[in-house]
Image (cartoon, rainbow, N blue to C red; front, side, top):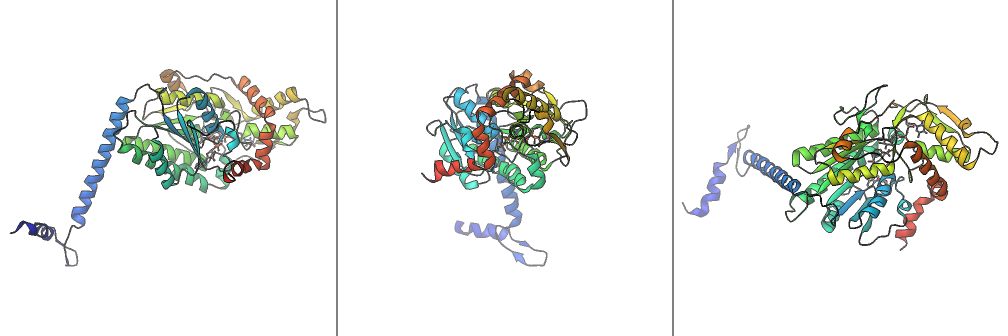
Length: 419
Ligand code: NAD
Ligand code: DAU
């Protein structure tokens, strides 16, 4: 037989008879399915090998030039983190990708100019095309993923955005990182995907005990369930594809630039205006408070020394009942700005209101791992942190006013759309 007949011969050989007696010819399902399977297994093995090699090469070279994609850098913690890196890692280029939802405020980064070391991109972590072009343009070395819907009360009244951003958005970002990093054999340093998560994935504690990194997940609000899902996805990308990921699970943050829907800035704002101070339930729910800059320092320590595939709990070792936090804010304000106009202390504004649905009772972090492995400890005590925080809010009353009246949203239009 002439060799040019070979393909036809093989095609005939691969023919098979379907259940209803028809003869089907061609490169059909029986061959194609195993071929696709083998192809995808080979691709996954290639990814795993590549990332293993990268991690071996991972040096303690964090002072070298790096390009870091920060998602959600206009939010509370993201903005504090961008500010910290802008001071401490002068050679790094930061790309801040933020959708500017209600929680994103460009004024949080006022004073940080766009240029060689900083670029702001308004966009959604769920936008596949945007992510692909960002990873291509910027040769990103590190992703620090803050972007999320973050407020538990909003997740109770409207969970859909939490599913979209926290789960689907994180998935989209993971895929973009995998696609960009996988075939890039010219890369010298190992890339890293750091996923910023919460202690709320572990659920609610009784009167004793702590959350460790091995505590089983037991999320109880749509917010914490969406964060737990994203943690699982990140972990799956490490185990399946070898994508170098690290997860951090942190307790309640407080400090400058926190949106005044969260307990501490909300109480500050209401107490300044002589409004009622809403305390949910009996006010005895416990949170483990950490000053936001300590959290950001912990993330830097994890970037520098953390081990891919690992999870690190971050906490303040500082448990407080909500009613005590609210009282402390009242007393501090009375001391700093004087009593209410009627001469009464601000604690008289405290009002117990109906409880949050599914309200977690107590969170408390065991941060032994990050302390022993990476040498991180919180530097700011709660008493000092609250003083600093209240001073910041007092000095930045226009920031609070602009957020409360919504005019902070004009900033983007003024800065970018009318240029
Ligand atoms: P935040 O709500 O203040 O900020 C979230 C930021 O993400 C905003 O700038 C918002 O515009 C942006 N964003 C939202 N959806 C986006 C999307 N689809 N695409 C791009 N950007 C988007 O939140 P935060 O309090 O700063 O928390 C940041 C991260 O840290 C979250 O992942 C949160 O789960 C986690 N965390 C928060 C705390 C805390 O106490 N606040 C504690 C532990 C972990
Ligand atoms: O534990 C980490 C989590 O901390 C983060 O993952 C979340 O993104 C962050 O929002 C925060 O969640 P909380 O629900 O703990 O924070 P929040 O400030 O909303 O509430 C703190 C506690 O105060 C909580 O027990 C509910 C209570 N509370 C809150 C508000 C807004 C009140 O009693 N009154 C209020 O008005």
